[in-house]
Image 1 (cartoon, protein in one colour):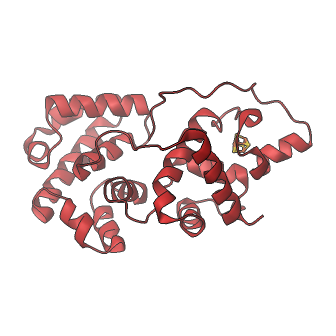
Image 2 (image 1 turned 180 degrees about the vertical axis):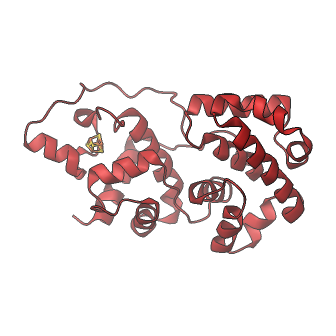
Image 3 (image 1 turned 135 degrees about the horizontal axis):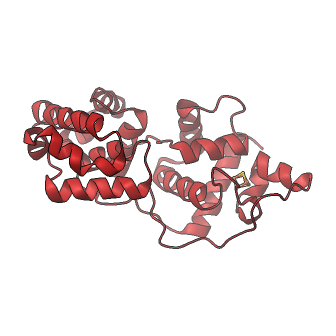
Length: 242
Ligand code: SF4
């Protein structure tokens, strides 16, 4: 089966299993989504949330407040996310640039610019790469982009969807070819949930995996009788999604 068809089938199955999924937090404010995604880079969900909440409570996640706040105050709040000094500097710079370029409001950029142009502009902000820009575009404005995180990369690689070419662009482009734009958000969230609960970095629970027959690694393990993975566990509800 073609990679596009396998991915499409996998997402249909996850849709039946998970039902509708929503992005975490408030997506009505693109600046907050931007800062939260910057905080999420290379850290756990728990620490990202701790840092985000402290910043919200103690400084306020608004361009004006962050641009005028002392860097040390920002750094202290976001310490749980790691690399706090470097990130504080970036966050302050981002806030200043958002104020200068967009008057503190990113909606004009998201709504009025062509998607690729808006993506480029977001990526010109310090600390904002493809994933962060795509998350803001998809979560807030439902633009037709497909953000790829480490869980999605891992699943694509294990499923054997792209051979050795498993990188951000290849996976993102495959998802865009395979799925309808209206399914991008669900697919992104569903694959992350699958990656956290079943297709974990270590000891993936292939026996409990709903897309095992579509996966090279899972079906290969089944064929040769390699059932060395940990036994199936039920999916935990209430797991935070990102
Ligand atoms: S079958 Fe195993 S390796 Fe494949 S997606 Fe499922 S958990 Fe991951």
